[in-house]
Each structure stands twice: as C-alpha cells, then as structure tokens.
Image (cartoon, rainbow, N blue to C red):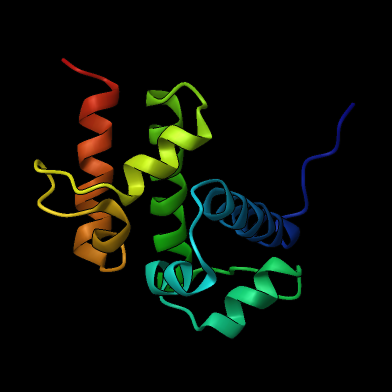
Length: 126
C-alpha cells in the first residue's frame, strides 16, 4: 500500500518540479537568464538561484507565469517533434501571425499568454 503524500510537502514538490521544468525549458529554447527573468517576473539573481536549486517557485505570480512558460515549451516541443534547433529558431524568428518574435513577446504577460494560445491552436487544430 502506498501512503498518500503529505499535504505539507505537496506544494514544495510541485514548486520544485516546476522550478526544474522552467529551467530545463529555458535551456532547451536557448533563452538567457535575463529573458527568463523577464518572462516569469523575477530578478536574474533569483533565476540564477533557481538554476543552482537554491530557490524554488512557491506560488504567486512567478509560479503562474512559469506554468504558462512550461506549457509554451511543451506545445512547441510537440509541434517540432522534439527538434531543439527548430524550437530555438522558431522562438527567435519574426512571426507574422504573432506580429513579432516569440522570444520578445513572451517577456510581457500579455505576449506570453498570446504565444501560448497561438501554439495551442496550432498543436490541436479543430
């Protein structure tokens, strides 16, 4: 019989998993710490601490933005079938439908949300 996870550790585990996923997604997309800090609304020094596992996202706005960012990564990764070079190129290229390059757009909340919506519609056409 498997014991249910302790309620007190569940949020910590979710934060640790999301922190690690956020860092991995940024690395695979070729984003700098500066860009990631703009995307999730934290300072570059905090992002550096996230990278070295000295800081864990624990809720609030940065947590929510990181969830959206990881969702963006997962959608894009599915579209390009895991081709990291294609994903990086897409992020940096100007996109007429989005009216800008995704890497620039996602540094603002509205842009991040718009890019996620765009990828979701491309990933699962009706």
